[in-house]
Image 1 (cartoon, rainbow, N blue to C red):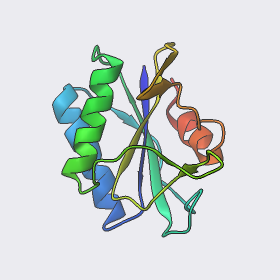
Image 2: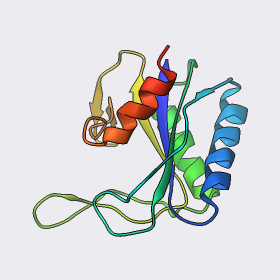
Image 3: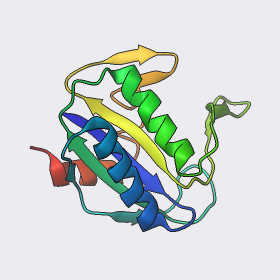
Image 4: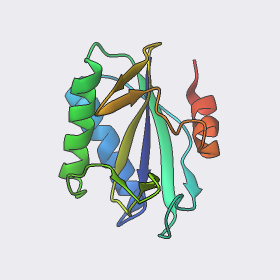
Length: 138
């Protein structure tokens, strides 16, 4: 099973989540299980609250191709292309976003390359992620 986290804190947050799920399902030709939607404060920066949701599905898409798809959907939904930014102490800098799609888990794979870490490195730092995953774990 592949698990993704979706988050939005700009614009019509519910619409952004729904559109991201629809675009993923259409591109991957999959049915998804969806968690509840949780509203959380922005973590790591000051900004509007996020709506967050987790989804899971089965697919044979390769992990890097899935990352490309997720980033393409983010851009289609108004998020500028981005690369990770870090402050002088090496802490990640976060920004507001119309949509964020993170690959949380991909079956039992562990991947650590420049552009992709699976499982997602912040999966244990965001308590709401565990709640969302518990909602859909099969």
